Image (cartoon, one colour):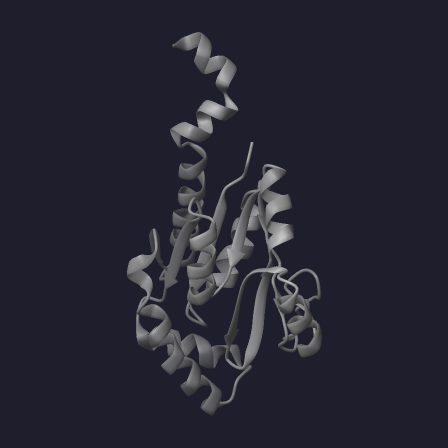
Length: 202
């Protein structure tokens, strides 16, 4: 059975990464498609687990060879998703998470029409700014730039399938889990997975 492809997008600081990590812990059938990036690792990030960290030349070579399902340049760094890794994961029956920006989401939806897109929003613009300051990783100038970019990113919300407001984390996580489970229960998925049973019943 082919797995589901979930696209999860958010403005920087909305809590997307924390939600994805919690989902992966809560549901062993969900796997993360680890993206490639040219940016430097943040404290605590592990190569191959959070991202595949590569230099600019390596990324551009992969891009030129058509290895990426999607790629984008965000905050001065390049990001890309391996098409081969996605295809192999889906064919193995895994539900895959692509944690990518709106540009990448747009590229993926053009190739994978069945992809389910989810946008994570903060409860307010003030909360978003507070979260960025709370990270303690960026200068005031960088945060101001991220806030400007965030407004542009959030303007693309209407084209997504689902929207989660990350106000109370546990509620947002329940919403995310509910979306994943609902997609597994779609009639076409159930018909394929339980074909023998359903055939006897109808």
